[in-house]
Length: 260
Image 1 (cartoon, one colour):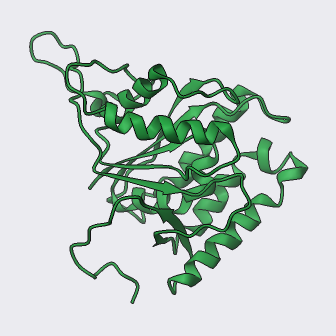
Image 2: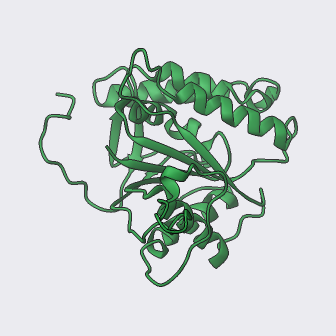
Image 3: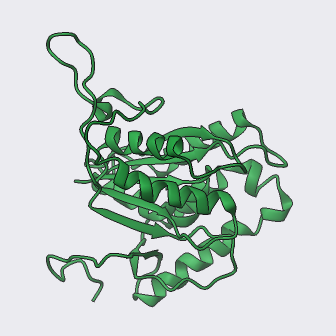
Protein backbone atom coordinates (compact mmCIF):
# COMPACT_ATOMS: atom_id res chain seq x y z
CA UNK A 1 0.00 0.00 0.00
CA UNK A 2 1.14 3.55 -0.73
CA UNK A 3 1.19 6.81 1.17
CA UNK A 4 -0.73 9.23 -1.04
CA UNK A 5 -0.73 13.02 -0.66
CA UNK A 6 -3.40 15.08 -2.44
CA UNK A 7 -2.52 18.78 -2.45
CA UNK A 8 -5.48 21.16 -2.81
CA UNK A 9 -5.47 24.96 -2.96
CA UNK A 10 -8.79 25.15 -1.09
CA UNK A 11 -11.15 22.72 0.66
CA UNK A 12 -13.40 21.19 -2.07
CA UNK A 13 -10.79 21.27 -4.87
CA UNK A 14 -9.63 17.71 -4.18
CA UNK A 15 -13.23 16.46 -4.03
CA UNK A 16 -14.17 18.22 -7.28
CA UNK A 17 -11.12 17.02 -9.16
CA UNK A 18 -10.58 13.48 -7.88
CA UNK A 19 -13.06 12.67 -5.13
CA UNK A 20 -13.91 9.25 -6.52
CA UNK A 21 -10.24 8.32 -6.88
CA UNK A 22 -9.57 9.37 -3.29
CA UNK A 23 -12.45 7.19 -2.12
CA UNK A 24 -11.24 4.25 -4.21
CA UNK A 25 -7.63 4.49 -3.04
CA UNK A 26 -8.74 4.68 0.61
CA UNK A 27 -11.02 1.66 0.14
CA UNK A 28 -8.08 -0.28 -1.29
CA UNK A 29 -6.06 0.40 1.86
CA UNK A 30 -3.81 3.25 0.72
CA UNK A 31 -3.06 5.95 3.30
CA UNK A 32 -4.58 9.08 1.73
CA UNK A 33 -3.92 12.51 3.20
CA UNK A 34 -5.49 15.68 1.75
CA UNK A 35 -3.42 18.81 2.28
CA UNK A 36 -5.50 22.00 1.96
CA UNK A 37 -3.14 24.93 1.40
CA UNK A 38 -5.78 27.44 2.59
CA UNK A 39 -9.05 27.30 4.52
CA UNK A 40 -10.87 28.63 1.46
CA UNK A 41 -12.30 31.67 3.21
CA UNK A 42 -13.66 34.30 2.82
CA UNK A 43 -16.46 33.30 0.45
CA UNK A 44 -19.93 34.87 0.03
CA UNK A 45 -21.72 32.30 2.21
CA UNK A 46 -18.95 30.69 4.24
CA UNK A 47 -16.70 31.32 7.21
CA UNK A 48 -13.65 29.46 8.58
CA UNK A 49 -15.61 27.38 11.13
CA UNK A 50 -18.27 26.38 8.60
CA UNK A 51 -15.70 25.47 5.98
CA UNK A 52 -13.72 23.39 8.46
CA UNK A 53 -16.86 21.42 9.42
CA UNK A 54 -17.71 20.88 5.76
CA UNK A 55 -14.18 19.70 4.98
CA UNK A 56 -14.29 17.23 7.88
CA UNK A 57 -17.64 15.88 6.69
CA UNK A 58 -16.29 15.52 3.15
CA UNK A 59 -13.41 13.27 4.23
CA UNK A 60 -15.81 11.24 6.35
CA UNK A 61 -17.91 10.64 3.24
CA UNK A 62 -14.84 9.69 1.20
CA UNK A 63 -13.59 7.25 3.84
CA UNK A 64 -14.49 3.58 3.37
CA UNK A 65 -17.11 1.73 5.37
CA UNK A 66 -15.25 -0.98 7.33
CA UNK A 67 -18.19 -3.35 6.77
CA UNK A 68 -17.75 -3.30 2.99
CA UNK A 69 -14.04 -2.49 2.78
CA UNK A 70 -12.33 -4.14 5.78
CA UNK A 71 -8.87 -3.34 4.42
CA UNK A 72 -9.73 0.31 3.86
CA UNK A 73 -8.23 3.26 5.71
CA UNK A 74 -9.95 6.54 6.60
CA UNK A 75 -9.03 9.61 4.59
CA UNK A 76 -7.22 12.25 6.64
CA UNK A 77 -6.94 15.99 6.11
CA UNK A 78 -4.65 18.82 7.27
CA UNK A 79 -4.71 22.57 6.49
CA UNK A 80 -1.64 24.80 6.20
CA UNK A 81 -3.77 27.96 6.53
CA UNK A 82 -1.91 29.93 3.88
CA UNK A 83 -3.79 33.17 3.09
CA UNK A 84 -6.69 32.45 0.72
CA UNK A 85 -6.61 34.59 -2.45
CA UNK A 86 -3.07 35.69 -1.57
CA UNK A 87 -1.05 32.46 -1.93
CA UNK A 88 2.44 33.16 -3.20
CA UNK A 89 5.33 30.91 -4.11
CA UNK A 90 7.76 31.41 -1.25
CA UNK A 91 10.51 29.36 0.35
CA UNK A 92 8.47 29.24 3.57
CA UNK A 93 5.44 27.82 1.75
CA UNK A 94 7.60 25.26 -0.05
CA UNK A 95 9.15 24.06 3.19
CA UNK A 96 5.75 23.89 4.90
CA UNK A 97 4.54 21.51 2.18
CA UNK A 98 7.83 19.61 2.25
CA UNK A 99 7.26 19.09 5.97
CA UNK A 100 3.93 17.43 5.22
CA UNK A 101 5.52 15.29 2.49
CA UNK A 102 8.12 14.04 4.96
CA UNK A 103 5.68 13.57 7.81
CA UNK A 104 3.35 11.51 5.62
CA UNK A 105 6.31 9.83 3.86
CA UNK A 106 4.37 10.42 0.65
CA UNK A 107 5.22 8.10 -2.22
CA UNK A 108 2.58 9.46 -4.60
CA UNK A 109 1.50 13.09 -4.95
CA UNK A 110 -1.52 14.56 -6.72
CA UNK A 111 -1.49 18.30 -7.42
CA UNK A 112 -3.73 20.62 -9.48
CA UNK A 113 -3.16 20.86 -13.24
CA UNK A 114 -0.82 23.85 -13.68
CA UNK A 115 -2.81 25.65 -16.40
CA UNK A 116 -5.43 27.62 -14.46
CA UNK A 117 -7.04 31.05 -14.19
CA UNK A 118 -6.96 31.07 -10.38
CA UNK A 119 -3.68 32.50 -9.02
CA UNK A 120 -3.95 30.38 -5.86
CA UNK A 121 -4.14 27.20 -7.95
CA UNK A 122 -1.10 28.11 -10.02
CA UNK A 123 0.87 29.09 -6.93
CA UNK A 124 -0.02 25.95 -4.98
CA UNK A 125 0.97 23.69 -7.86
CA UNK A 126 4.34 25.40 -8.19
CA UNK A 127 4.84 25.24 -4.40
CA UNK A 128 4.02 21.52 -4.34
CA UNK A 129 6.28 20.73 -7.30
CA UNK A 130 9.22 22.44 -5.63
CA UNK A 131 8.37 20.98 -2.22
CA UNK A 132 8.67 17.53 -3.74
CA UNK A 133 12.31 18.35 -4.45
CA UNK A 134 12.88 20.14 -1.14
CA UNK A 135 11.59 17.15 0.83
CA UNK A 136 14.61 15.07 -0.22
CA UNK A 137 17.26 17.58 0.86
CA UNK A 138 19.41 16.32 3.71
CA UNK A 139 20.63 18.55 6.51
CA UNK A 140 17.45 20.68 6.49
CA UNK A 141 14.74 20.33 9.12
CA UNK A 142 11.31 20.99 7.67
CA UNK A 143 8.41 22.45 9.71
CA UNK A 144 6.19 20.03 11.61
CA UNK A 145 2.74 20.01 9.97
CA UNK A 146 -0.27 20.93 12.11
CA UNK A 147 -2.50 18.24 13.60
CA UNK A 148 -0.93 15.29 11.78
CA UNK A 149 -1.22 11.99 13.64
CA UNK A 150 1.96 10.85 15.39
CA UNK A 151 2.30 7.50 13.56
CA UNK A 152 2.70 9.34 10.26
CA UNK A 153 4.84 12.13 11.67
CA UNK A 154 7.68 10.05 13.00
CA UNK A 155 8.59 7.55 15.66
CA UNK A 156 9.41 7.92 19.34
CA UNK A 157 12.90 7.29 20.56
CA UNK A 158 13.37 4.86 23.42
CA UNK A 159 15.58 7.31 25.31
CA UNK A 160 13.71 10.62 25.35
CA UNK A 161 10.17 9.74 24.29
CA UNK A 162 10.38 12.49 21.69
CA UNK A 163 9.59 11.94 18.05
CA UNK A 164 12.52 11.82 15.70
CA UNK A 165 12.21 13.96 12.57
CA UNK A 166 10.82 12.03 9.60
CA UNK A 167 13.56 11.27 7.09
CA UNK A 168 14.00 13.07 3.78
CA UNK A 169 12.44 11.45 0.73
CA UNK A 170 11.52 12.18 -2.88
CA UNK A 171 7.99 11.06 -3.81
CA UNK A 172 8.37 8.71 -6.76
CA UNK A 173 5.22 9.80 -8.60
CA UNK A 174 3.57 13.18 -9.13
CA UNK A 175 0.29 13.40 -11.04
CA UNK A 176 -1.93 16.34 -11.91
CA UNK A 177 -5.70 16.36 -11.41
CA UNK A 178 -8.13 18.79 -12.99
CA UNK A 179 -9.87 21.41 -10.85
CA UNK A 180 -9.15 24.31 -13.16
CA UNK A 181 -11.04 27.58 -13.46
CA UNK A 182 -10.32 27.76 -17.20
CA UNK A 183 -12.89 26.54 -19.72
CA UNK A 184 -10.43 24.06 -21.20
CA UNK A 185 -11.10 20.53 -22.39
CA UNK A 186 -8.54 18.33 -20.59
CA UNK A 187 -6.34 16.01 -22.60
CA UNK A 188 -5.31 13.58 -19.85
CA UNK A 189 -2.39 11.19 -19.89
CA UNK A 190 -4.58 8.55 -18.25
CA UNK A 191 -8.03 8.06 -16.76
CA UNK A 192 -8.64 6.08 -13.58
CA UNK A 193 -11.75 3.94 -13.31
CA UNK A 194 -13.99 5.54 -10.66
CA UNK A 195 -16.85 3.05 -10.92
CA UNK A 196 -18.58 2.41 -7.61
CA UNK A 197 -17.29 5.59 -5.98
CA UNK A 198 -19.37 8.15 -7.87
CA UNK A 199 -21.83 8.60 -5.01
CA UNK A 200 -19.04 9.22 -2.52
CA UNK A 201 -17.65 11.91 -4.81
CA UNK A 202 -20.99 13.63 -5.29
CA UNK A 203 -21.85 13.51 -1.58
CA UNK A 204 -18.42 14.87 -0.60
CA UNK A 205 -18.93 17.83 -2.94
CA UNK A 206 -22.41 18.50 -1.56
CA UNK A 207 -20.94 18.44 1.95
CA UNK A 208 -19.75 21.95 1.09
CA UNK A 209 -23.22 23.39 1.47
CA UNK A 210 -21.94 26.95 1.79
CA UNK A 211 -20.38 26.63 -1.66
CA UNK A 212 -22.76 24.44 -3.69
CA UNK A 213 -26.15 24.52 -1.95
CA UNK A 214 -26.57 27.91 -0.31
CA UNK A 215 -24.71 29.68 -3.10
CA UNK A 216 -27.18 29.72 -6.00
CA UNK A 217 -24.48 30.58 -8.55
CA UNK A 218 -22.70 27.28 -7.88
CA UNK A 219 -25.66 24.92 -7.53
CA UNK A 220 -25.13 23.45 -10.99
CA UNK A 221 -21.46 22.65 -10.36
CA UNK A 222 -21.92 19.22 -8.70
CA UNK A 223 -24.01 17.92 -11.59
CA UNK A 224 -21.72 19.03 -14.38
CA UNK A 225 -18.77 17.62 -12.45
CA UNK A 226 -20.60 14.29 -12.26
CA UNK A 227 -21.47 14.54 -15.97
CA UNK A 228 -17.75 14.88 -16.66
CA UNK A 229 -17.04 11.88 -14.43
CA UNK A 230 -19.44 9.79 -16.51
CA UNK A 231 -17.95 11.14 -19.75
CA UNK A 232 -14.39 10.22 -18.82
CA UNK A 233 -15.57 6.79 -17.79
CA UNK A 234 -17.04 6.36 -21.26
CA UNK A 235 -13.61 7.07 -22.78
CA UNK A 236 -12.21 3.93 -21.13
CA UNK A 237 -15.37 1.83 -21.32
CA UNK A 238 -16.43 2.15 -17.67
CA UNK A 239 -19.40 3.88 -16.00
CA UNK A 240 -17.17 6.52 -14.37
CA UNK A 241 -13.64 7.84 -14.59
CA UNK A 242 -11.40 10.71 -13.53
CA UNK A 243 -8.69 12.25 -15.75
CA UNK A 244 -5.07 12.85 -14.78
CA UNK A 245 -1.98 14.28 -16.44
CA UNK A 246 1.60 13.07 -16.02
CA UNK A 247 4.82 14.78 -17.10
CA UNK A 248 6.86 11.65 -16.48
CA UNK A 249 6.23 8.28 -18.15
CA UNK A 250 4.11 5.80 -16.25
CA UNK A 251 5.58 2.44 -15.40
CA UNK A 252 3.41 -0.68 -15.59
CA UNK A 253 4.28 -4.09 -14.24
CA UNK A 254 1.50 -5.81 -16.19
CA UNK A 255 -1.68 -5.20 -18.18
CA UNK A 256 -3.88 -6.66 -15.45
CA UNK A 257 -5.28 -3.31 -14.32
CA UNK A 258 -6.25 -2.09 -17.79
CA UNK A 259 -10.03 -2.11 -18.47
CA UNK A 260 -10.03 -4.45 -21.49
